[in-house]
Image (tube, rainbow, N blue to C red; front, side, top):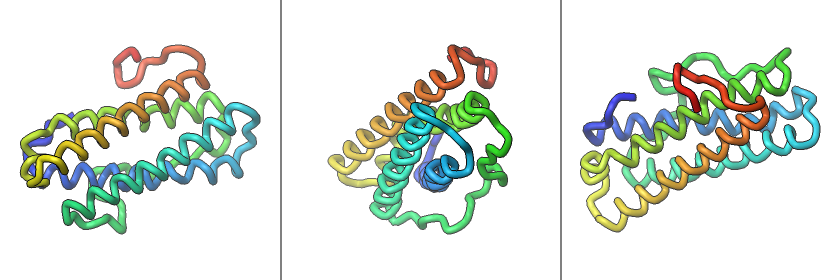
Length: 163
């Protein structure tokens, strides 16, 4: 993942994550389209609810930084939305897990971009709060990855790395 070296790159990354979390909110709707039972349905509902909360947190930070809230998909994101038609539960969670890993890694990278954060937010207390929020989001995305992993059964290789 490319290092975030300035506030413009940080702003763009936040806009992308805002959009991605908005897409993940649709998980609640997927439940109606696919027949999941028990723990799988509960897992989908949790992922959807958390993504909605993440979306709100990102919106707060976009507003605090006076960054435009995207109304269309930012450049660099895949054009396709999630489509689980015909997939079984493990296959669906395998696809979701890829995005959970991407989100986790992005929030970690955002959190590490201290110089860009300082340029975007002048007050140290605001910087600290932002870093704390990004850390929380990264931890929750890791929890989501684990939930997905449990649903697909064991360890899988994603982008050449063992998880």
